[in-house]
Structures are given as C-alpha cells and as structure tokens.
Amino acid sequence: MSAPGVLSFTQQGWEQVLAKVKRALVYLDAACAESLHWGCGASRLLEAVGGPACHLREFEPAAVGGGAEQPKAVFVLSCLLKGRTVETLREIIGRSRFQYCVVVTAVSHAAHLTANHVPAAAAAELEGQPVFEQLEEKLCEWMGNMNYTAEVLHVPLWLAPVAPHLALTPAFASLFPLLPRDVHLLNRARPDKRRLGSLSEVDAAALPPELLLQIRCLVSGLSSLCEHLGVREECFAVGSLSRIIAADLASYAPAKNRRKTAAGRASVVFVDRTLDLTGAAGHHGDNLVEKIISVLPQLPGHTNDVMVNMVELTALQNEEKNQSMIAPGCLAQSNDTAAKALWEALLSTKHKEAVMEVRRHLVEAASRENLPIKMSMGRVTPGQLMSYIQLFKNNLKAIVNHCGLLQLGLATVQTLKHPQTAKWDNFLAFERLLLQSIGESTMSVVLNQLLPMIKPLNQRTKDDYSPEELLILLIYVYSVSGEFTVDKDLGEADEKVKEALARVFCEESELSPLLQKITGPTTVSARITGGKQDSAFSRSSWS
Image (cartoon, rainbow, N blue to C red; front, top):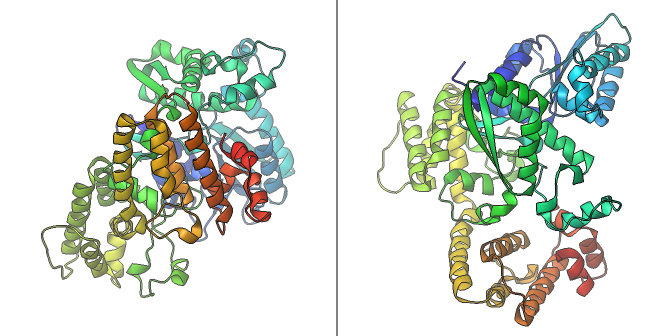
C-alpha cells in the first residue's frame, strides 16, 4: 500500500470489499461505481469475483435478482441504509434466492444514529452497532431463513481519486451552497421561530433535516479520511454552508475521540463554490483536461469522466451509427502505469506542454512496439497525433498493451478537433473585453454590449452563442462585476436581456435537459402558446 493519501484511503476501502465478493453478485450504486472506476477499476472487482460470467449489476429497484446458482450477493452503497434504499434492498432480495448477503455502506454507524434521531448522549452509551444489527436481521428475514448469513458493515467509499493528491466526491455532487434566496425558504419553513435576515445568520438548527443528514454523511467521510491520514484537523471555512460543515466536523463525536490520539496535524479549508463562480464559468484556464471535460460527452452514470470515441482503432467507418457499437474509452486508467503518468502530467501542465506530452508518450509506445513511426518536429496538430494512433490500428497486441494511453490520445485529438474548442478562444477574447468594459463602464453598458449576441435559432450561425453559452457569459459578467448600483439604465438593460433570452428559449426547437431544469415548466407553456411571453415570464424565470 502507498503512503497515506486519498488514493491509498480509497484503495484500502476497496480491498475490504474485494475480500467479500468471491463468487458473489455485486450490486453498486452510481457513486460507488465511480469510486471504483477511479480507485482500482472494474477489472479488479471482476477478478475478485471470479467465474466466467459478469456479476456486476446496478443497484436499482428494477435490478435483476439472483437465481439458485447465485446464492451470495454483495451490495456496495454510498448512501444511508434508510427509506428507499432499504426498500430497494428488500425488492431485490425478495425476487432472489440468496443465502448470504453483505451490505457495505459508505456512511458510518454514527451517521445512521443521527438519521434515526438517536440523541448524542444516548448514542454515546450504546454498545455495538444496533442499526446495522437490526438490518442484518431484516436481511435474513427477506432471504426467508433466519439461519442464513447477513453482514452490514461501514467502508468509507466516498472518494473518487482522480490523482494521488486530488479526489472528487460523486456521492455529494448535489450538495450545493446556500443562496441568498434560500433565506426566504428557510424562514417560511420555520414560521414560529426568529426570522433570519441573511445567510450569515443561518446555522445548523435552521437547515432542513435532509440537508443536515447530507452534511453529517459528508462529515462522517471526512472524519474517516483524517483517521486514515492520522491527523488532527484544524478547520477553516469561507461561506455560510462551509461554516456549518466545519462546525459539524468539529463537534462530531467520533472525530473528538480520534483527535485525542492523532499524531499529525492538518488544516482543512472549506469554501462555498458559489463565492467564485468566475473560475467555473470562465475560459481563462490554459489546461487541456479542462477542455476535454468541457467538450466531450459525459460518461453515462458518472459526474467526472467523459466518453472517448474508440471507432478509429477498429475497421468500422467513423460514422455516428457505428459509435454506439464500440464501447467508449474514458479518462480513468487506474491499472495502466504509463497512462496514469500521462494523465497526471496533463492535470498539472499547460495546454501546449500537455499536447506535446501526449505526442511523446505515443511516439515512445509506437517505438516499443516497433511500429513504422515517422517523426515530425514543430507544432503538434490533431492530424499528427491521429497518424501516430492509427499505427496501432488492427494490431491487437499493441492496442492491449497501450489501451489506456490510446484512450487519452484519442480524447486529446477529439477535443482539439471539436467545434467547441474553436469557440474557447472566442469566449476568452470576449471575457477579456468584458473585464476591460467593467473597469471602464457601467453595468448597463456591459449588458448592452452582450445584447446583440443573444440571437434566436433562425439567426444563429455555428460561431454564435447557444442559450447555455449565453447563460455562462451572464454568470461570468455578474460574478466579476461584484456589487453595483441599480439605476434606471441598468434596469432597462436588464429587462432587454431578459426579454431577448426569453425569446431565444421560446424559439428553440428543443431545450437541453439543463435549460429545462433551469427554466421550469413556464418555458414549456410559453412555447406551447406560440412563443408569446410577457413580463411575468421573465420575472418567474430569471428573478
């Protein structure tokens, strides 16, 4: 095992799971599958399961159960064992013939006590893990024989380690900082208590139970990570939700006990992401990975990986109808040493150096396979990279030996050739112009500069901005401008932008899922009535 870190923490957790899965049907939810994907790869799990058949299934109500020849099941879940999750367990087990069930949850028993409304004082006096023990009895009951075997255990599988020192949290992808408008919703939910005036007054007691539980699950995972690292953490927070999370970690009972014996020290900084939307919405990042993740389609079921079209390495024509016939590649290469080295280099280098690094790795791989490579110096082009990649075509041994590297190479080529990449520089140029304008002009002038760029579908060319791209620009504008005075000119410019956006949305042939989520049913009704919108539409959609 490597030195303590986010990668070793995740791999150590998966080793505990792998020890349980021999000859078992394994059900995973999406977040745990993503942790496996980046942490050790599905191939490790399949090797541990053994047998010729694929025994991995998605954890969902409609999941296929196990027959008489499949008596063992392992469920690997990122969430609390409560509510719909327990119902799904019962449904799957009820239509199966299991005799041995193991349920692994990424959420600690202490967090389960909180979810079951056990007071902290009472929880401290409990012996064993009663919540898990009760579920074990239920599992035997659902299997139809109390003499069958059931295990419920906690393994903190909540991180997806993208690199040795960078991890993401797919199970908490929906955890979002509070916004100023949320204060009104919080006040409405507690009419008999003191009204909150701003986000700075919000504390844990004011939050809804569902959000509190989500925070406690996150804190549970963070405490497990600190225990693995052997550190006593000192927490700092920037933002209202971060402050609540930091306070919960400080008061979390298992964390208090852990800190008494921890040898090391660590500083943990929590930051509300909404305090820096400029970084997320801007295009000033000169990093190849940022562009790959931005332009290539998302890998289904994942929050942080993309689909790489692998048809170029086959005898099929690179046509849309053939792309679904070949399994897509991806960025995660947890079991390929050379590909991991390239991926980590891409994460930390600038765009130009990253593309050159991809070329170097492809050239070295082709040389090792004695492929007829023709070296060329100077600027690296997508065509040049593709010529190196196609040397591996129809050479199964070479493809197998360098599959991870070829996936990253194709991801690079497809990103460089993608139309959206060409727009990247346009975004950057306009953002720089906006920065100059904001420094020299009023907000109303900036919005009026943006107004001609808001074009309906029948007036847009491939170089114009789509509705989603316009929203990104608006987020960037309002984020970098900071506080500004609202006057008559700004009010008029603001209304013009709202009306232009409403017109664009109504005239779209089909809104993307993201835009449907943002605009809600109002947009749909406006489109049904022929695209007519009034001020009520603008207010309900954009206020």
